[in-house]
Length: 141
Image (cartoon, rainbow, N blue to C red; front, side, top):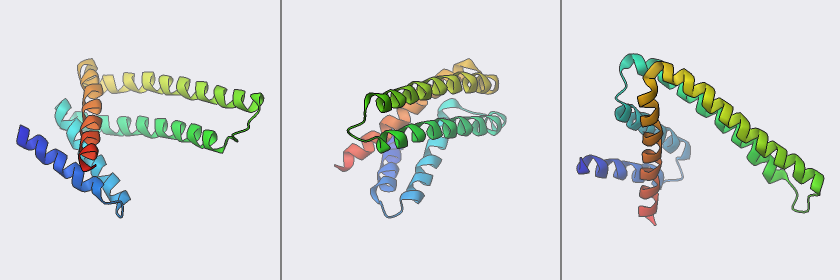
């Protein structure tokens, strides 16, 4: 098991080490994430076939919401007035509310495919994968 983890971390390190092939690396990390989560959840072929489109759709929608908020925050002038700040504040609240609603709706859809137990395992697997990626990045420093 330790050998598998070591190889996994080594692969992540190799993938993330070159910024020249950034998109290719993102694709490889994504492939590794899919593999990691699939193994952790022990998804059957039938579950995978239904789970991944829902999961990816959910993540794409969350990314779009967050991207919109980030872009708005970046465009905000440093010397914004109270009205402009209030608009950004409201956008932040709306974004968080929309994310929560997406989470609720997609969790129900995904639960219908993989069950509540695997939903909980999914959250843990996502966190574990992120931690492994961060550890491999820290190892490069």
